[in-house]
Image 1 (cartoon, rainbow, N blue to C red):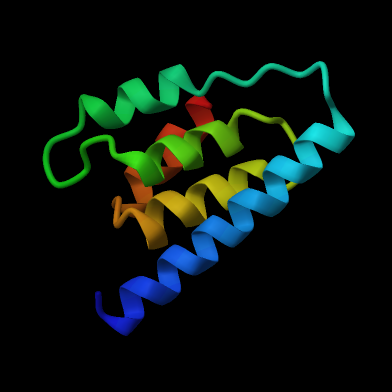
Image 2: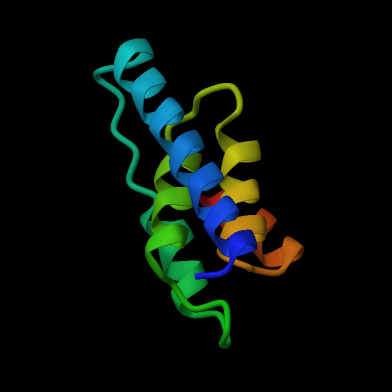
Length: 94
């Protein structure tokens, strides 16, 4: 695994852990599905098909926390290598 990919994965996993922890503390009753977001990415042409990083981004984007959309877009764009316009559209659906 090259250094750049390893750094990106570490950043994405760290951000997801922080957001997930905040979601549990801030809104334990909130239920985020992200299924529309994941469906949008699954229907996208390759290489933007759904994968684990996309799922994490969609889940985070669906939490409705203050920075959820920004983190979702960062995970999709920088982590999962989804085009910026597709990442923004997917995160709006979350």
